[in-house]
Structure formats: structure tokens, C-alpha cells
Image (cartoon, rainbow, N blue to C red; front, side, top):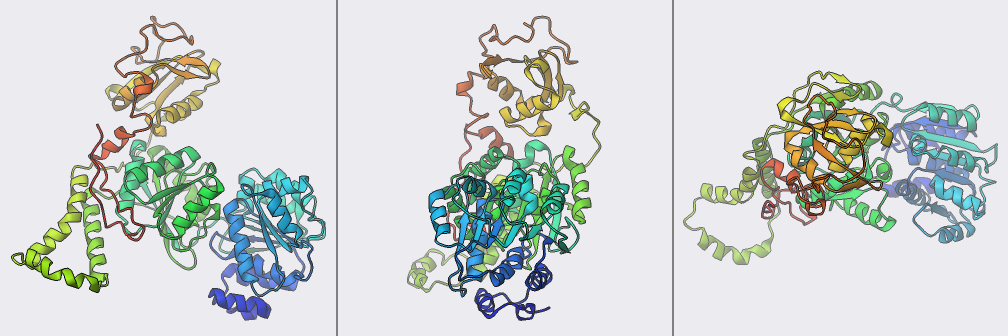
Length: 608
């Protein structure tokens, strides 16, 4: 079917569709809407994010409910507040000509009593997050015992977030003869078990293949050392002046840290994660939708509600723990018929994950190199030239032309062009002229239990630390602990060996001062954690040491690194990390109007 009229929708919905500018149904809409309109059935629909799933279940639900009744007839469950609000707003837009329609969004972070009051006024459709919905049911603030249609949207993500018990409890309060429509981008076993438990002979539709990525998105990966990950991110942004992107990190802490670094380095960036208040999240998303933020750094959970069609790039700053999650990430771009790029920044230890992702999404990755400084200078220069060439002349400048012409009357056209473009080009050139090559050649690593024993020698420092298996550490937990405390990449801590009451680990020599300074008078769970350079490079225990005790070092802890309270590089100032690219980043204009990144203010002076 090629039109919405042919799908059999009523006139009220068709008028709203015309107002919204929809012309042709998407594939998932073409497949789902006729089934849901013409039969009372359960449905499992597998389709990628951005393919029009909300309309696929929204139009049939609006067609079937009785808007003259004040009874709640439809329940839509979604994983996040942002997605909940997005669905509710879209349902209201679809039903704008359905007189008497009341759609209420129910989610955490907003007044539960206000939401309950809105429902009591007669909400035919409730869109809810599982946690808040369960809370309202337990408080008897909502009655879903008569619903006719339930929708599980982004079912795989809800289960990923641990909502299985909540969903089970919520659905136990609904009639057994209702219709359940399950929409998901992927079909892991947990989703299949939900379908089996709560659905009766569901019809199935699939847009593309299961878990397959949309053909509108190209996939690229860039291989760098873990410690160069942030500098690689900046270069990718600089090499794409018109970038409008979502940058994915695994944790809330990393998300906030990367966003703060980008802002400090002059990029129009913002963070989106679960520790933000609802008001903060709304402010960030509004700025992103208005293109005032070019790089939105987000966790997987927080990004579930991003409904922006013009995202040019998805950048995987870190790969997700669950490989299937990559499908959701890449689905943020290439929406509404547009093309997009999904970039992955990986270290050597993560390359194998690329092959696993390729098998799941049935798409090949292109291995590309991080551009060098001169490539970026050229891209930025030509971007600026193009903006100038296409800029509409402001006639108000006419009255200043006489003075300007007098100033440049002895300057030739070529000289004037050189001077004009040098204002911007010189900033990039000075920043990047001595920049190093960030690319790493692929090669095998000899790893035992995740520990890299090929590295070491004179280029690394081996340390003794007075915690071990008695303190609850194995090699992986200790490596993660050190990585998080020292703000290092996962591959920057290696040769980790855990004994009973003490352990050993290595870092590159360049981080030695940082490691020793950080663990000066450092306490973990109430006891002092001592770190010293190990004289026995083979990992044996030193004779001059006091076992694995928790006391302070005899020397008072000052090894030239200063007291922990005085250190800068390991916490607030980040000067050591930012200095690695030679000098500070030429700062982007803070104006939201220049989204191309061509307008830069004076470079910051490097901190000392």
C-alpha cells in the first residue's frame, strides 16, 4: 500500500497525517497498521529505531478506542522518561481531531499526584515508564483492569534495564483478553519469553532482518591507543565541521567527564544521563533539538528518548557492554530516509567486538584512519570558504564599506583573501602542526585472562599495591578499580597480578608521577591503600615491605608527588590530558547560530 488512505484510517486521523506532512507509510506502518486495524490480535514487530513504530501502533489504537468513554483503554509502556513524553506528544498530535481524547504521560521525576489527577479526568490512553506505573498501581492511583490494548515499546531495552519484574507485575493487573502489541529493535531470549508468557498466538512482522542495522547507516571504526581516545574524538569532530552527533559512553561518570572536557575545549557539547534532574534533561534536549548543542554525550539509557531526525553521526566513544545495544545506538542516525554514519573508537583489545557486531547487524565496518592535523586544517578552511561563499549579504554593512576600502586600498585581492582566511587557518595550523599520528596498526596480542603480558620492559613501571584477594579483588576488579580511580584507559593498566594480601600492576612510564601522587594518603573503605614502585619487576614480594597491612607508609607518603589534595592532573584541572595534543584546542564560537564550527575565538593558553 502506498498511501495512508489505502491503509483504512478514518478521516480524523488522515487530517492529522496531512497536517504532520506525512506522505507515504513506512515499511513497518505498511505491515502493522492493516493487521491491527482489521483484526483483534497480538503482534510482535521487529523494526529499527527511527522507522515509524509509534505511528504503527498509535494510529490503530486511536482508531479503535472510544473517545467518548472516560475509561482507560490503552496502555503504552516505554523504557525512559524521554521516550514516554515523545510517544505521548506524538499520540496527541495524531489524535488532534479526535474530540475528547485524553493522553496522559506517567513517568518519574514529575508530580505523581498531578499525573493521577490527569488520569482521573478521563485518560483513554496512558503512556508510562514501568517504574512509575507500578508505583501508581501499588498506590491504587490508576485502574488498568479494563484496558483493551497494551503496547510494549522498545521491549528489548526495557528488559535490558531490568524492568522484567515490573512489566510482569503491571500486566498481571490487566485483562487476559486484551491485545498486546510488542515492538522491539532486537529479539533476545528475554523478549521472546515475554512474548510467550503474555501473548496469545501473536502475528509477527519483521522490517529487515532480526537485529539488522538500517541500510541508511554506514559503519566505521578507528583504532587508537586507549589513552588517545579523547583526542581521537576531537579530531573526528574537527574533521566534520557540520557534525550534529550523539556520542555514546558506557557510564554516567564517563558521560559527564567527556562532555565537560569537550565544553572546556570549546565545543558546543552537553551531557545526558540518569543523574540529571528532569528539568536539566529537558534543557539539554531542547538545546540539542535547536542545534545549539552539536555533540550530545549520552548513556544508552538516556538516549532512548532522542527523537531528532537530522543527526549526522553517532560516535561510539566506548562500545556497549551488550553488543545488541549497538543496534539501538546506530539507529539514532539515518532516520526518516536520511543517511548517517556510525563511528566506533576502539583500542586493540576491542577489535574483536567489531567482528561480533558485524555478524549481528549484517553490515561490514570500514576501518578508517583518524585524520592528521593538515587534513583537518584543509577541511576547516574549505568549510569556512563555503560558508562565506553562500552567506547572504547583510545590506547594513554598506555604510561601513568606505572605511574598510580605505584600509585595504593597497592590498591586492589575493593578499586580502590570504589575510582573511589566515585568521581562522592559523589557529588550526598552530594547534595541529605538531600533532602526532593517533592511528594504531592492527595486530595480535598475547593475552592471558585479559592481562597483557607482552607489554612492559623499560617502557613501563611496575607497582606494588597493598590490596589483594582478601580485599575482594581479582585481576579484573583491580584493573577496573585502578582505571576508574586514575582516570586511565582500560589498556593503560596491564600485567595485573593479584595475590592474597597484595598485588602488582604496570602502567606506562609517562603516568608514573600521576599514579604515585594519586595514592599518597589515599583511603579505600576506611583503610590506607599504598602504592610503590616495585623493585622486583618479575612481580615477587619485596622484603622491605609490611605485608598487606592497611597502615600509612613509613615515609609519610611524600614521594615528590605532593599530597593528594594538591594534585591537579588526576582530578579537576585535566591539564595533563589536554596537553597531550600539543596545545589547547582552538575554541569554537559559543554562539549556537554557527553550527558549522568555522568561527573560533582566541585559543586558550595552556595551563601550567
